[in-house]
Amino acid sequence: MADQPITFTDAEFRDQIKDGLVLVDFWAPWCGPCRMVGPIIEDLAGDYAGKVKVGKLNVDENQNSAMAYRVMSIPTVILFKDGQPVETIVGAVPKGAYQQRLDKHVTAAAN
Image (cartoon, rainbow, N blue to C red; front, side, top):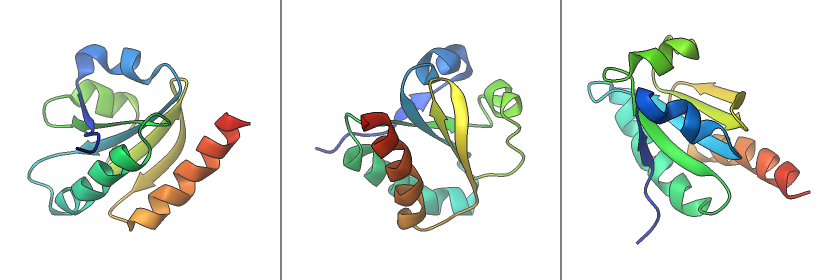
């Protein structure tokens, strides 16, 4: 079975993103575009296992983290490197758009 995204919460969010590359999907269950992005995030968790930690944060249940990173609309996907945001994608985009951004940072981290 492929790796699944981690469910992040406000309680441990900063600890979860502090090391390495971490892709976080800020979403809510009522959001139609978020439901479109969900399967892509699940695929990325498997595709980048061991290279990028992939997780989801429900903004309805975890408003502090969403506010801290100025998430104004969802879906918003932020790639963190060692706790700092390095890429942000707002809205539903094809899987290739995520892969292109991830590959750039995975390659840089490997060098």
